[in-house]
Figure 1 (cartoon, helix red, strand yellow):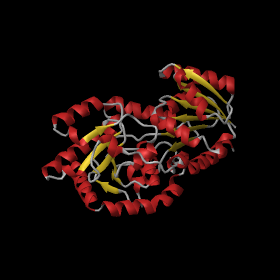
Figure 2: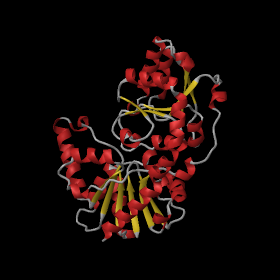
Figure 3: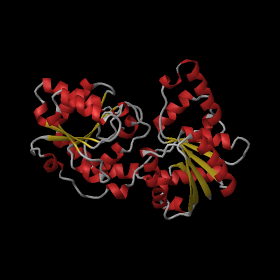
Figure 4: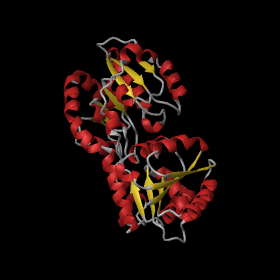
Length: 370
């Protein structure tokens, strides 16, 4: 097949999806046309699709130019199928394909909230999204929680069109044994439990909940037992660092540069902390479970799906008090958590291999062409 990928926001989650999913043989046999903002993506696209014939159409960083270039690429390349990544890209592709019978697949990489559709403008926005996305052949949420969320917000879209395929990770990458010595880098003693935070400094990722949980633990005189290694980036990192300083907690945090070697960093912490307020289908808990690192995570949408039937310790999403209690309990039973995480590794490898995602996606491609 010749498949055209249309992307409006080529950021972390979507870029990782491309990298993890399209590396597999079952998808390498196709050729690809990629339409996305940013000429600087050319090298990345060339790397990801190095084993497949591909053409890259860069656009300006706005939706109008993406629409223009998508129409141009469609006319020039004549793909067998259009695959949009993200809701905005899906709407743009639906407009371009309005009078076409060409199959159109939309993969959603996020979830929706009532606050996005409040008031008259919100209702109009929701109606517009629903109308345009209903033009697609199939909608592919990247997880089953995300699929339930999509169905709840857009019931007018035919339920038979919604084809969830859970995201996955590069097992080969995370099955390596290297361990980063973060204790020496942070200059902390070996009797202190090292917690790891890996994520953007945005409200969604809940870093503020972790800080508030540590403040509660300080009141119980438990703070001397832990230290936090942060590998987050972007967002409000400076504001968060200033807040930590004002709260007198700076000595309990070490901020490392963003790393491309997540497996060794995950193995370098005692417990990975994931206090997200929402996720579509997060990769971080998959990665931690595959390397055998104990997890403390929120029970938010998406996160709960990935952590289900695993040794992950869950706390009530949004509750810093409950998070502090779960951390305190984990400090007492750390050895048990380690052994449970180690035993679950083989199950995690089978469950979260991106090869499964690639095979299911290819089967969906083939069924759409039929």
